[in-house]
Image (cartoon, rainbow, N blue to C red; front, side):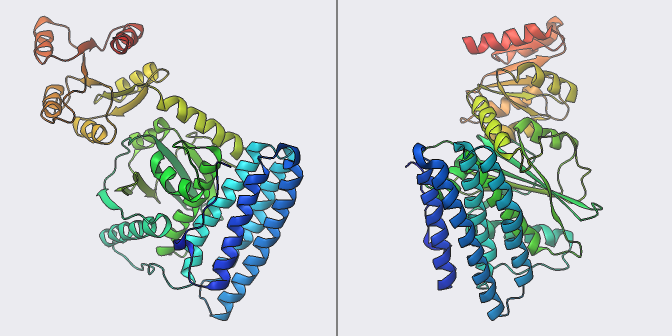
Amino acid sequence: MDNQFVWKDEFDIGVETIDKEHRKLFRIINKLLLFQEEEATRQWACREGIKFFKQHAANHFSDEEEYMASIDYEDLEQHRRLHKGFRENTLPALEKELEESEYSPDSVQHFLGVCAGWLIGHTLTEDVAITGKRTKKQMNLLPSEHLEAVKKVITQLLFDMFQLESHLISDAYNGEKFGNGIYYRLIYGTKRNEKKQEYFLVFEEKLLINTVGKIMGIKTNKLDNMLLHATRYTARQFVKRVMEQFPTEDEFELKSENLLSFEQFQKVYEKDQPNISLLFDTGAGYFAYCSDAARLLESGIGMQIEAENAMDEVKEYLEKQKSANGKPRVLVVDDSLTVRQHMSELLTKDYDVTLAESSLSAIRNIAFNKPDLILLDYEMPVCDGRQTLEMLRSDQQFADIPVIFLTGRNDPESVKKVKALKPAGYLLKHLDPAAIKESVDAFFQK
């Protein structure tokens, strides 16, 4: 058996009866993992095992709520609502999917991934709060104080949930790509939909493999369906915990979720940067947290994930990610949005394309995700292509990145200036798109 859900000491919250029950739930999931590999008995064994898991979870929730009542736990009602939502909404939807698919391997992985993610997040956030080991809620904060408080909460949560000592790299993260990323979007709203809050969690793939993946016993260095489903539910608990630290009079509930490609994620930043946008280095990989309570939400970005399509969406998303990860990386730097979009449409099919609107944005992108080729606008305001190339060549780490200039001028004097910098080549922006694509293809073929 490749996957094995692993209990860790840090999951213990210090209440013996609750810790004992958590371990039992872990063991039940492991048995279900084993059942799905036995083709002859998979359907019957999984059906019986899932019934057992469901009943055991319900009993555990009841015992946990009884314990909280015995100690007069102040957030008992909220905890009870979370239990009820999982028991009456999440589990029935998953069971329906299992029955309709006749317990296919994909549907079983979906069920186990969701249960694992929910259990990881719930154990390390809500349950640990029972013991009082929880960040104090922040009240009546000024904007600057609020930002500092969010930084502290995120840092603490990364430690609580993943046992990672992280440090903040930037409190003005601009959507730059770092390694192979998973871009997860959550939108919360009030019951009347009068107010909305939008959250983005960006995980470097290796961070997920080194944290949620290790808990689940993933032995490969690649994401799979079950790990991504677990990540979704762990991320929900993460955001819920952040929201709890900054209470408002309005009661927000999850309205929709999306898994985005990098291009879709970057499109959001083309419009407007979130009011909180933080980038952390966890030591196991990069993590970004972005939120905006006032954004006019962009429609049509990413397929909404619901109970009916979650399995297919995650599977398709992973296939697209794997396809993109094998492509050569091209960074397009141009102050014109039209040019950036044109180059992206032209190259995305065959290349992993990242866009930057300025030299500063380019340097930030390069630092996180070194490209195989840079297409660099020669005429940019503030810091032009020449200065950008000089900065790259002054740093030994980036000096060998090939650069092809993009220029709108083809007069002899302008061409002479470009060639004097000895780039890997130059392209005229007004060339036929097929000629530009052919030139980029020829560069990589060499």
